[in-house]
Length: 244
Image (cartoon, rainbow, N blue to C red; front, side):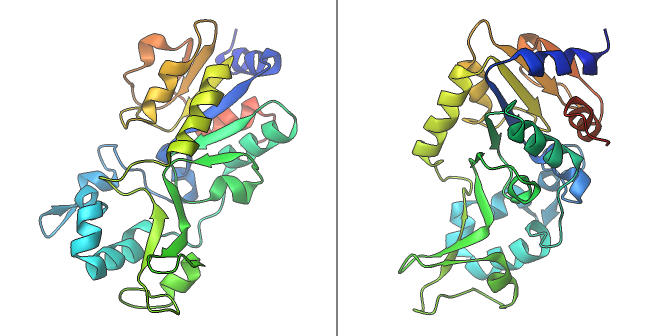
């Protein structure tokens, strides 16, 4: 049987399906990935890795340079959802998908119509004042040079999880609960090397199925019940009954 047909059948019969996705889900929307051979983390600026620039330490010590990097490299205000995002939203509307657990910060899942989205690494569209807690959006930050400030004078910090920072434990607990209850987990566009997010796969029960839709091998390939190396945008669109 064709892999897509197998996937369709498993989605249809599963009472509890969750999706776990990474940067690869958004590459078709024009947002580069991070850990591939040509990803953002393979690049450097003046000897400093992009990964280091996204650390808490760099944000604190070089706040203006951090925001300069963020505006030039990390923010994509014109990005639109691709068929993968719409496919997942369709599955949720039809009651075939319980939650989207994402490492992405671009908000494209919500833009496509998904309601139950767990943004484990935060959102690039939220900026919180470190002094009073007031929230601002991406447009506010893009319209202002230098370090963006709140009306109260406080510095704005992106509501994203930087390196050296912990994940929101309540949100992570929700993700773990979905993983434990899942009978089918669809994983796409992630290398499954970043923890604790990658470790969500370990919470699957022995009777739960794991489907990996990824162009490159992952540390969990031996655990997978089905591995699809095709373009994830087309795979998810076909599995949901959409035209890719």
